[in-house]
Length: 399
Image 1 (cartoon, helix red, strand yellow):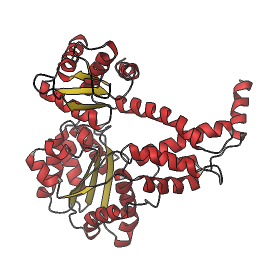
Image 2 (spheres, helix red, strand yellow):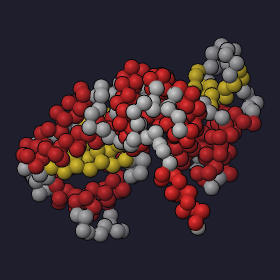
Image 3 (cartoon, one colour):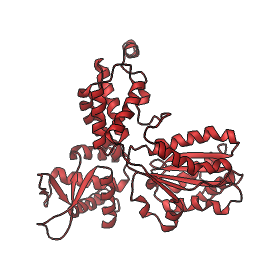
Image 4 (tube, rainbow, N blue to C red):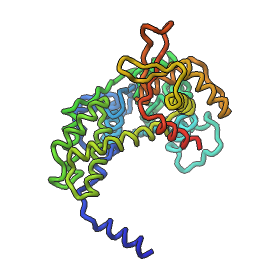
């Protein structure tokens, strides 16, 4: 016991290069969001009518991972909370991550709990939850519902239709909806009724470029590390890596934080060598996180592809640059076989194609249409990460 306590004492008293490592977290929301002033202004303009007890427009925000969508919306909600007292406005808001709350019932439960935190809603129907929430809003509240990663909601059409049509039955109060998605094509999957009401206004967040990422990292590094413990070369390299990853600021911050941890263990400043070493560790962490949050069938599809890539395919072929690619037909057969062995009902080929699109959007695979030399047109698949690591992550999830 004494030895353990001694380790704690040593760690606490050990010199560190960090000033405030929380500032370097991708989840930290700073007071200032560089290069997102225009987007902040647009979101504020959509929500501003709530301060006059008027109905705000529904808003749909999309763009790739790490481009500031969530940070901007959370920043605006904080400003809304600060401003509503000045205008004595009856305004409320809730932020929900739909990777966690991924059904209409779960979302409505959170809304009902917000409306009446003292009540128990255990075992009550979605209709009761919905009516309890409307009862709260009907007292004259303008309520903003933010659904981050909205495309993860399984029965989304029913949910969006309920929330966007809620205003039709309210004599007082209003409900405003903000949907956030990484998928640019997501809205095309919505029912036309849901699409027309949800997408009253849309904002597309462009990726950050290397110079913008460098400025963001410098600002965070100045607060996150002690003075003189980060080199300009390390910041530029982390920014360049992140610019290659679709301008992902979260990736840039994770690189800098991991590089800082590696440098801190040696008592050295963060230099380029630590960013290079951090890159492999961060990419592996990201893959595991992505796989852990995949829906069931996407996980099985990914496992089938990894299985083929590892064992070899009858139809596997080399591309012009020497890379091995797989045929989608055989991958689908592998998916069906896994579903049978795991006693899960396989989805149709049409759904399989959608799963491939979503896996490609997340960077777990790449696909291409076959060229000359193959009878007909088929989709060729390449796994973006080592198959043994992908399989291990999926197996851990289903264990």
